[in-house]
Length: 81
Image (cartoon, rainbow, N blue to C red):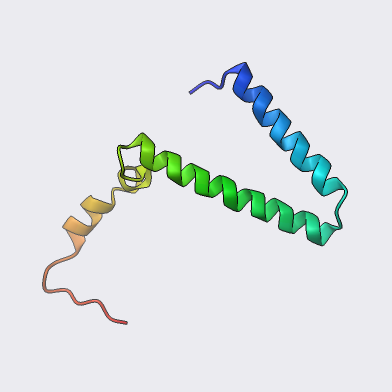
């Protein structure tokens, strides 16, 4: 997928804003801000991945979870805690 210039401009704006914010913080605060931002973006990615694939996270398709379990797990297998 090729990003539009509008998307590129928005991404640049968001990163510039984040960078401006963390440049005014101590290294510890800046790292926490960056980690918080990353966590929030990761959550958005997950939400969009589910919407993209009609309610199923796309990782299920990419990782072929269903195929793995059908091929490797039997009804006689037990899970231990």
